Image (cartoon, rainbow, N blue to C red; front, side, top):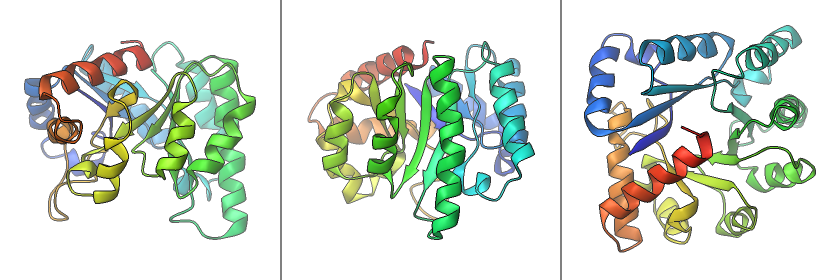
Length: 253
């Protein structure tokens, strides 16, 4: 199994990061650690060097953070990505979040920043790892003019089934199923109707734990795989094999 999206560089793991990674190594074959900011991108790169061939980095800038960031910081993130194209698996997480942001001007700013990262992924033929919340259809439509992005991943997909079906019509577009599928009826109905061949698995650690009191961690991706097997009425081993195959193809690992 592979956790295709987590944040083990976050301070929530500072006290027991080594133990957390050991638990992940006992259950998983790889972990993809997604950058969240300029500082986070540096941290995920260092972790990938320390745990070579197990932790892999992506570089991005979370939309809720980026909307208030100065242009110099956005440019620094662009430069990080271009400088480290040989080190990272994807541009992301980047995107738009209209759940937390309701201000029209800030939403427009999010879109402007997002499109800058899309341009980089398109120009350098790098997979695009998307954070999209309450704007999945808008993001999908924005990508229609970009033909050189090799693969697109909707991280922690939680949009409508209607938009999911449009995503499935695109070759090499994937949706990532988080541990939310274990307790969210909406996510269960969604991923029951999305073919396993287009699903990745993730935890989004330290977020999306089984209960609000818990801290999520990469090893818990096992629970998402088990729930997917239940929803698709198949063996855990089949879901394990297919989703790992998808992840290795999408991220070229």
